Length: 451
Image (cartoon, rainbow, N blue to C red; front, side, top):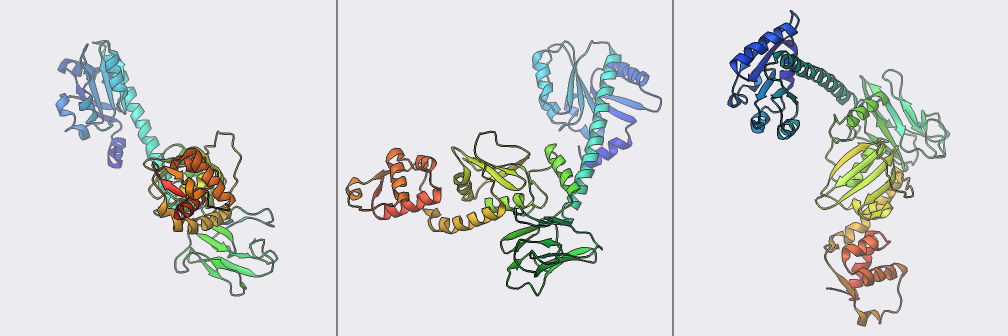
């Protein structure tokens, strides 16, 4: 039901228009029974229609009633045309087939009707409409909350150090309040609002309010420390990130807004955008993880492609475990890094159920890991063979090789045991990029053949 339909229904909640697929005599008797069951301030009008009239007249009525005689098939296609409008199907001695058909239609109830008992039919119809009123009122409330959260989720409320180290002294987060002064970030011995575990007394940058907006600037006596952040020309918003010598600080919305957002997610009332700051088109796994980790999210990030899927479990913005098919841990995480064509969903508070050691990977560790991996993957990623390729060691060339590195030995052993490239990747303990680098080298030396 559209918002306009909701408004119209709420305005005339005491005046109901019912379209009924029912005989004229039964319609008049039902009208009388409804009048007796309702208060004097409430009014209902029952209009007889045919099944073929339902679709064309669905916007003219608040609810629908269909009466089925003994053995009459359920007109599912006609009822589907009502697009989820509320309705009651009264059946004389209902069959299992009739009940199952009605159960599969949203917002429709099926009841057994003792033919001629119009008081019963009136009461069931009133219950159905009352339920609809409650659902609409709840829907309007939740839409209002959702709209409020959508507006507030970008407003800066605090500056936080993402995944603060154990050596941090002082707070890891500070409130940003318009009119209460600026917030500065500096070294361990500085007078800054937030002090990073970096030796010295220098200040690195500050955020300040200007005409009810938050801006930021570097502080000139920051020394040689590297400081980066959003564009200076635009106001700050929740989700923005600063980098100071390997430390990451993020601008966040208020905790109450984040809690409300979490409740909306748990109730399934938000799309799979995890947090509202994830609005940009995120076409890489590392960019996606950055958003979730810097937002200190907890739950399961599910990533799926046409023929593959994986789960990344987070707790407070730290990666606890990664599962991808038969592999897990860092091997699974690095494999997912290479995915480009994927979709994702996020399930709050979901936890890994397998008894596996925790990775407890911070965003800074992830960033360094990805930096190391990406350079290597760019060199060999395009050379990845298809999953059905089979490899064999060439015995004649194998015997001429004098020395082998440990990595080469492990890869060659996997080739001898499994041959199929997908099995090699899944069972060899090395990372996929290490395996591929080694296979490319061995192939160039003609130590491997493709079968």
